[in-house]
Image 1: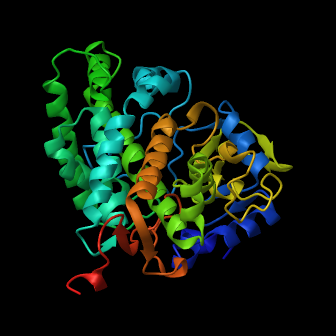
Image 2: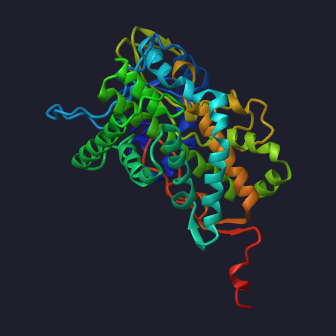
Image 3: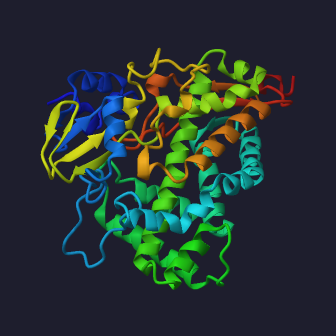
Length: 410
């Protein structure tokens, strides 16, 4: 058993708050962890070095223990991320297919619709009494947004969300039913194929139209198109759900934070960055050493897998002053690694930041009170050592202008 064991074994306390594990890993430095058969990289500078050197540390064939092992007897291979598990020049070519959908101006254009959706969901909280802010808010907004950006009809958002959750369920957790995974993959693939078949030839801001155009031009196969959409769906839905949920948990558990943000709305964006730093929705991922290398003075043989811990790098005291605490005056707030770094930096980071900011702004505007009904140490978190976020946030909220429950009928 090593310092990493509690995370890999999905100890509830460790996955909820991995800071103690990360501190031990940083103190030890780069080392081989037999639990995942990989060298663990936990210090900030070492993590950045690996992420920037895609030539030495490849993203290909690095799934490791993140996804369940493939069944060689299955004639239909599992959906495989096209961006996450590829290197340049292939990675750059594939990314260029959808790059123009994620430019700052294109993302900014979505803000009015995102704000409208956020307001709808927050306003509904007033009718629910005690709520679960994951189920009733954090899990609802991102799937609506990613459906808009992809070009998925609103009528299909509910099953789109269910597929996204099923596809993500096995990431960093090998439990679950392989037959069910195959059924979900088949249903999802058939649905995306239908949308691609229905494409009218118009290329616009919708990502599906750009993927369909790439297929028609011979740049992608149909299987690659489906995998591409699955990757963008998971990245745009589940990780943003975890980010929003973590932000709400911080809002509800940090004394005085709501009032401080209301008094100075300019602090909302620094808060979003601190939430991403402290509670990165993706805590780490693998790379593959393509040649003999050295990280932190430790030899890394060619062919070795390397597990880079973004979450640990974001809490490295060598980079972050007063690193365990949320600070709204942090000068390097946006320099965190929640979205990775280098060629594989998250393509949707601007969209995730926008959603995170808008949700907080709407909550500040609409809510009179926010009371979490569980202390942070009792909140259930996703059973994964890769994905990170609360899966339930029981709370009592009161909208501005509404009557407190005890006053009704008095």
